[in-house]
Length: 179
Length: 273
Image 1 (spheres, rainbow over the protein chains, first blue to last red):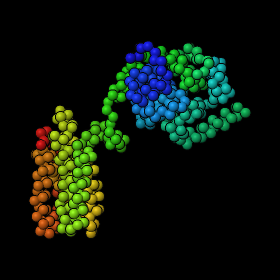
Image 2 (image 1 turned 180 degrees about the vertical axis):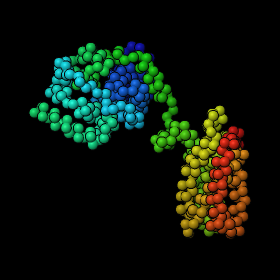
Image 3 (image 1 turned 30 degrees about the vertical axis):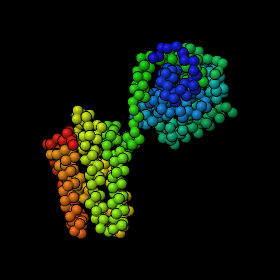
Image 4 (image 1 turned 45 degrees about the horizontal axis):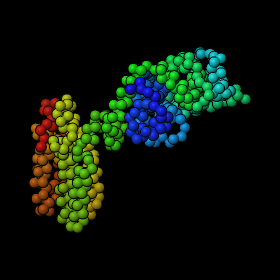
C-alpha cells in the first residue's frame, strides 16, 4: 500500500475525501504524514511501543474527525495538534518511566544550527539556543509544540506551576538577550 | 511553501535524533510547511514499522464504533470487556426500558385515579427490574449468548455485572414513577427492599436454575403472596415495617447463598428459555 503512483490531490483535498470515507485518500495521507509525525513525536517519547500506539490513535482520530478540520492552516499542523495531545494523554496514563524529557545536554550550538535558527526564528532562535535545557523544554512544549500550560506539565512530568515559573524565567532571559 | 529546503544530511540527523534542540525546533517548524522535506523524511522511516502501524490503524478504522454508553463506561474505568458486556445487555436497550417505564407510568396514573390501585403499583414495581434481569439472559434476546457459551468467563461474574447494570438503570425509572404517586412518600420507596429481596432470591436460585426460570419462580411467588394481600387491603403483610425487614434479610441471605455456592456450582447460563 505504501508503493503506488503519487496522488495528485493536495492534503486539504485528501482530508475532504477522507471526510467522505475515502480509504484511498486516507492511505495516501498516512503515507505522507506518518514519517514526520513518527520522528517528531519520537523526540518527545522514549518508548517506541507507546509511540506506535499514539501514532495509531492519531490517525484513527484523523479518520474519524476529518470532517471537523476547519480548512485553515496546514493539514500537517492540524495532525500535529492531534498527535501531541494524544501523546500527552498517553504519557499521563503511563507515568512514570522517564524523567523530564529526552535531554540533549552538553551539545554545543553548531554554526549550521545558528544559520538555520536565524532563518526560521531570527535572533529569537539564538536566544532560544542559549537557554538551559529545562527552560528550553518548557519553551518548546508551550511555544513550539503549541501546548497549554497544563498539557506541557503532563508532557514534561512537572507541576503546572513549575511550567509557569520556568516559562517566566525563560522569557526574562530571552528578553535580556534580545535587548 | 518556503523557497529553501533542509539539507538532506540535516534531515537524516534529525530523523535519527542526533541534532541539537535548536536545530530540531527549526527543522520541525520548517517541516510543518514543506511537503518536499516531509517526503525526504518518508524514506528514512522503517517501512515495516509504517506498514505495521498502518495495519493496526486500518483494523481500528474498520471495526464498528463503540456505542456511547460503552465509551462512557470505559471512560469511567470499567474494563473494555465489562463495558461491552453491559452495552450488549438486551434489556438495557431503549425499547425495553420504554416498556418498563410505560407500564409503571400507567400504574402510577391508575393510582392517581383510584387509591386502591396504589397497591397495584407496589405489586408491579419490583417486577420491572426483575424482568430486566431475566431478559438480560434470555437466549433469544442476548446477542452475546453464543459467544458466552464458548468463552471461559465466570458465569457468576457475568450474572452479577448484568444484574447490577440492569438494576442501576431500571431502579431510577421505577423511582421516578413512584414520585408521581399521590399521598405519602411511603409507597414511593416501599418497593425498594422487596425488589432487593426478590433479586437476591433469584440470584441464589441461579445455582440450580437458569436465570430466566429463577426469576420466573420468584416473580410468581411474589404475585401469589402480594396480589391477594393487595386485593384484601392487607398491604402491610408485604410492605409493612416487619415485611421490609424480612425482605432485607432475604436479599442478604440470597447474596450470602450466592457467595457460598460461587465455587461449588456453575451458574447455568446455557440453555435459557
